[in-house]
Image 1: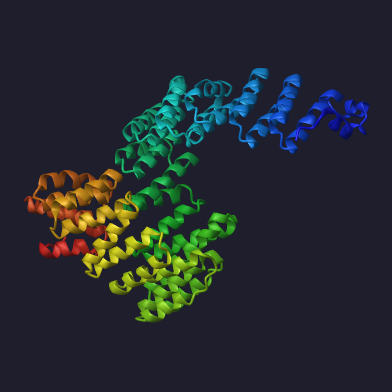
Image 2 (image 1 turned 135 degrees about the vertical axis):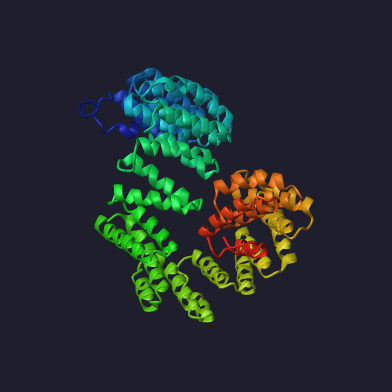
Amino acid sequence: MVLTGLQAQKLVEPIESESIQGNSKLDAQLFYQLLLGELNIQGGEVGTGFALMLDAAQKKHDAQLYRRAVDVALQARSGESALKAAQAWAKDLPQATEPDRFILQILLALNRAEETAPVLRSLLNRSQGTARTDTINAIPQTFARVADKAVALRVVNDVLTPEFKRPEQAAAAWTTLGRMQLTADQGAKALASARNGHQADPAAIFPALLALELMEQGQIMAEDIVRGQLKASPPSNSNGSAVALNYARILLDLQRNADARTLLLALTKAQPAMLEPWLLLASLQVQDNTLPAATESLQTYMRLARDSGDERGARGLTQAYLLMSQIAEKQNDLEGANAWLDRIENADDIMAAQMRRASLLARQGKIEEARAHLRSQPVRRPTDVRLKLVAEAQLLREFKQWDEAYNVYGEAAKAFPDDQEMVYDQAMMAEKANRLDEMERLLRQIIAVKPDHHHAYNALGYSLADRGLRLPEAKQLIEKAVELQPNDAYIQDSLAWVEFRSGNADRALEILRPAFKARPDPEIAAHLGEVLWTQGLTEEARQIWREGSLLSSDNETLQSTLKRFNVKP
């Protein structure tokens, strides 16, 4: 309802005007107007209340009243009214920065990104030094929800053009442009921007972090930027250590363990109080079977984590206990392995401990007991049902019980019918169990439900190519996977393999060499080595196979290839 002046007057009659004037900057008339506005807002007449509030703000030139008018319009989901109030605020109080921030956000929410250049430029011009850099760095997140990425990129590029020439802001400006380009699927231009930012300030962290994102997306050429930043800003300082830690994580993801180990050793030496490098280094050392060094790294991590009181360090203790349990298991100390698992108390981590216990049982030949142990675990939260089934299936996979793993994944797929990853894993077990028709049925089922599931296209295409079946169809499937995920080295490997099976060895080499460089992997090494061998490049093939064996000496594809060619790497 709309409150009349008489109704509102009755509500304020007990308040003397002298009292109002003595305790507020508002006179009685303005106080009455504001009260009337609030009452109309409370009564559901938001438009009337907003008009009264905005009028009061303009009369008093008051930032708080303008903010209230904007809030009222936003709560009423009236973007145009909110924009009107914010623009009036900016015009009335030109020194204030807050109205510009509101205008920018409202324009973006209204999907009017093309109108944001003046206000974005105004915000930049109002800030200097570190604040200016922070404003530049915040731009990609501010524009993240804009639907038209090309428009957003054009606006930001125009606004940032002067910043590219400012020594203090150039690195941040080029990085922000690069992030906008990356969002607009312009990876090559993003790499060029990262290089420009690095050239402007070789020690700056921003271009290096963008380069790391590009590496994650398969642009291995971005690595030179990261290395350059670490040379200019070594791990002994905070910027260098942050870049080095993220670089190490990516190297581990790329399975470049030797490079990751070298970097983590340097990082733990330069920053011995940092927590995470010790844990990452320990996981590598366990994998490499250098158990005394792994134990020392874990002991250092556990001491630092307990002393720091840091929540992330405390959560990492679970991983440390699991690794210590794994070390004890490798040393045939099963009692010690279980003792480390007993230290895990966090309810969120108990399932991880029980999965480890099941693995210990299985390694003693008690596979059925291990499965029963997992099944007996209580369900503390909805996700535990899925976790238990996945843990059991993974345990069966580890011990190569393909048929049983296939059945458990099938049970999980029925329990979670919308989870296509369960169906995909079941399909992979069908292949291992030599149920090839079933594998193809399941993968086609995934493609029908989720036509952008690149793994399904790739798996089906590779399976056909590897068996030399329906090669044109196999290539079509893999090319679809490439279209969906162009920088995935494993999909590139599949594409090379179907080319090789089709008699195009030169084209296969063109694809395999950069794929192996981008992601050193024993299976890619097996394929690259085979193509090289058949082309008469036997020494290079042996070298690639040796590298693959160092990555994983028990990889089935690699071992099968070496056996066929009677080669010892």
